[in-house]
Length: 295
Length: 284
Image 1 (cartoon, rainbow over the protein chains, first blue to last red):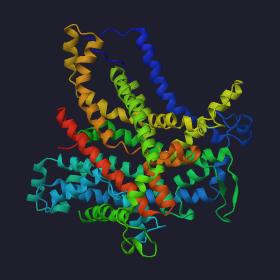
Image 2 (image 1 turned 120 degrees about the vertical axis):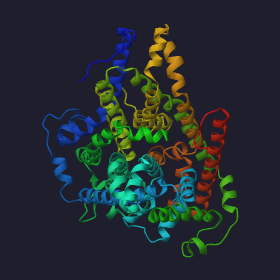
Image 3 (image 1 turned 135 degrees about the horizontal axis):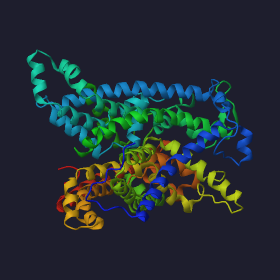
Image 4 (image 1 turned 90 degrees about the horizontal axis):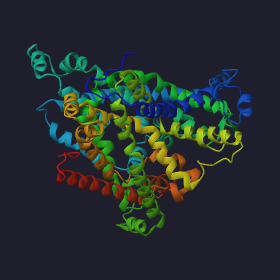
């Protein structure tokens, strides 16, 4: 904890202002944290306790992992978790590779076709193609009900591309020249000079892709049949829309899943985000993002 | 470079060309290219369709409410955070406030249901206290405030980043000089802080105006069934229900294309206005 660093010229704050500020900040923190606390607590409570409390538990008296045992029993949620993890990992690697290659090419002066390609890319920002044509394209390409339909249509994100390009451009020209004099080719320069210098930017862009793939819901609902569903679509169907949790082996719908199980699914979908969040946070503070936004 | 370019050509420009379907009647067996042309027929139908105009109106309503009630929140929060001299408190609040931005809409909607729904936290508290329960999630009249509240919860914290970046650019000495000249906190705010963030505020307003026909597609789609299309149908969900659900691809694509063209024109116009006002705008 670092102490307050109020400069000498600044007035001493009045107690009233201080209290008002503290209250406002506490409200912000509570508004964000309480919903999470409630879902975690409820997922850990026993079904009886949840019913006695009218659907809600703020702090379980006798915590149990029953709800988690239920969903990890190899049913539809376990499968969906695997799908989400697979799509997230494969998608992130593929997106990162393509974004890096394109951003690098566009960051170097005098690359053949650089300018038109940049305009081509930026124009898509202004004029997205629209839902129906994109859907028909995926359909005509025969990608319906394939995991590729979750990745290929969103392979390169323009914002991430611009962030990386800006970062590559900030690598000092002398380093490029030195590497060239040593006889390094384009790929060599990228891999051994540019990328090691851009670790922070790569981490941010990679994490952005990963979060986007993990959170992606609409494309899954649009393109995939139910036996290929990722976690977000399972969550939508069984928690948001309240359908009965189907037994993956028999395909039969049972009654609406107990509140504890619904909350456990919610927790599982949120935890990976909470896990990567500190890393994202670490790189924000390095100012990678703010620098990029400005440019 | 090639895979990236190929991606943009195929999935953006390929799909963009696919907008010709707006001038055709889609016949699944004939595919995109084989389907017969119907000229501007789809657009004529669209302009005469009351449901389409309702969706346009709903979109604008929600966008305006967001502009009035959401837009000032990140700005206010950023100004508040900026006045904190205790940096560890400030960093902690920032970390907490950014977090919801990374939570998917499915989860956000589920969280709101669990807190405000008919058996949710709020209502079990109300009935516990012997009060009437309120149905916020299923009430069409509460829908608009609800979606704005969700946007505030999810993105207000994240929205502070750009303002804080602008505020961080201000030289501390400007404040010191103003203080020595006898300017109190309010005058310093007015003459130092405000000029520093004005370009960012203008830029964000322009971007929002240019994007006024889009209001959180996933958010709307997830909650449309709870309150019905009368209040929750926006242009994007209209396109979805007409095309993907109803199979009327040509008609839906016409609505989508209409939105795309108007949206692009709005961005262009907003940018022009920004240049007039002597601001940088989104692009040159």
